[in-house]
Image (cartoon, rainbow, N blue to C red):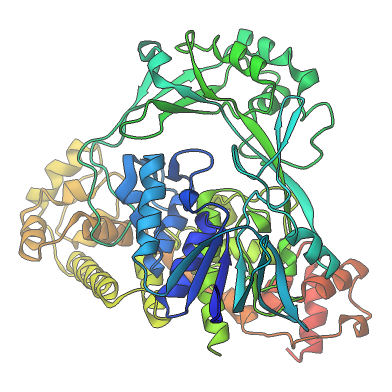
Length: 622
C-alpha cells in the first residue's frame, strides 16, 4: 500500500497535526497524515472557540506565516470579540466562537485541497528507527510506512485514560480509543516521559435552558476577523450567555468530592493551573460562593451547548444534580457529562528549537505531547515542526522565531529552555516584548519570513507590503502636517484636554492620551488624506498605534537589540560543561541536560545564575 517513501509523515490529525501537514505539503514535501479517525481532523475537543488572551496573537501569527488556523476560524465563526480593548494595544486579543462541526469540516476540506497531502486512517503503534534516525512508522495492522521525517502530534491519546467519578475508561477523547505502543518504545530508547491531566465540561441541550435568567454576551458591534487573507467578516452573530454558580451548587458538588478522582488519589498528574475544574476552583477559592459560567452555543444550527467554566471529573449524577441548581439550568438535559483525561507527554527540554528531538534525528514532537494545553499553542507547534521537517530533509537552514519576533518564539523557547511540569498555556505576561508582538502587526512581523521559506504566498506578501506602505505614509503625514488652532481646540475642549495656543504638527497632538483616530478624522486635512489614499480600518489602526505608542515601541526595540547580542554568542555543539569548575553544580547539570545553543538561551534556564553566564562568557572569550 505504501511503496513510496514520504518526505514527511504526520501522526495525529488534531490542530498540531493539521498545521504540520499543511505546512510541509505547501512547502513541497510529499506528506502523509496518519490518524486514528479521519472524521475528527481538526476536532475541537474542548471549547468551541479560537483565540483569547495571547492565544489570539498566536492564531494571527500562524496566519501571517501561511498556516490555515486563521482561515478555518473565520470560515466557521459564529461570534467575534476583541478582548481587553479597554487596555493598551499590546493586550488586545481576538477571540471567535466557532461552529464545531463546520470548523472540523473546513479543516478537512482545506487539507484535501492541499497538493502533496495524502491521508490514511489507522493507529500508529511505533516508529521505524535505524541507528539514531527515524525512517518511518509502523501501524497496528503491521504496515510499515517509510519516511524521511516524522512529526508526532498525539494530543491526549498516548495511553489516554478518561475519568468520570470512580469510573475509568481507556480513551484519547470521549468515544475514541487511546493510542498505545509509542510511549513504551520512546522510553526504551531513553526518552523521559510523564503524565498530565486536562478536563472538559458537560455538553447540554440548549432547548432545556432558560436564557431569560442569564446575562446575554453578544459579539462586537463591528466584528473583525483572524486571517489577513480575503476571508469574510461576520455579518450576523450568535449570542453567548453568562450565569453563575452559587453556595448551593458548591455544596452539592462537595457531596461528590470523596468520589472525585482528583481528591481520592486516582489522578496523580497535574492539570492546567489556568483552566481549573469546578471542584478545583471550589477547593482553591474556598472564600468564593460564586463562579462565572459561560454558556456557549456549539454552532449555527445545533442545539448542543458548551458549559464553559464547569469542567469536571465528578460522577455524572453529581454533575447533573449540581448543574440543575445553576440559574437557567433548572430543567437541563445532558448530551454528555464532563470528564478528566490523563495522558503521556514528553518533557520538551528533550527537543531542539526546531522541535526535533535531540535523541533521534528527523523526529519532531508538536502539541500536547510537549506538555502544552490549548488549540492555538498546539497549532503553532505543528506549523513550526512541519516547516522544519521540510527544511531539514532538504538541507536548508532551520526556521526559528526569536522571543522578540513572535509569541510562537516565546512559547517554543519557554518549552525548550525551561520545560514544564504542568500544562503550559500562553499569556501576554510571558512575553517580555509584548508591545512589539501585537495582534495587529503579526503580518508585518512574519509574512516576509513566511514568504522567504516558501510558505506564505506572494499575494499575502503584496497585501502586507501595501498595508505597511500606507501605514508609514499616514504616520509621515502626521509628522509633516500642521493643524490649525481653530480646528483642534474645540476637539481638545470636548475632551477636557489643555488647549493649544499655536499651530503644531498633528503627530504631537495625536500623541495625547485622550485623542483618538476618530477625533483626528474630524479634521479636514486628515479625512481628505484618508479618502484620497483609500485607507481602510487596518491601516488606520496601525497608524494610530505607531503614533501613540512610538516611544514604548522604540524602547522595547532597543532592549531587544541589546539582548540580541547575547543571542549571537553561540555555544559550540557538544560543549563540555564539566571542565568549567567555576559553574555551580545546578548550572552544570541543567546546561548538560538542555544543551543551549546560545548564551541568551542559557541565561533563561532556571537555575543558571548571572554569575554562571559570566563564567561562560569568559571561557568563550567575550
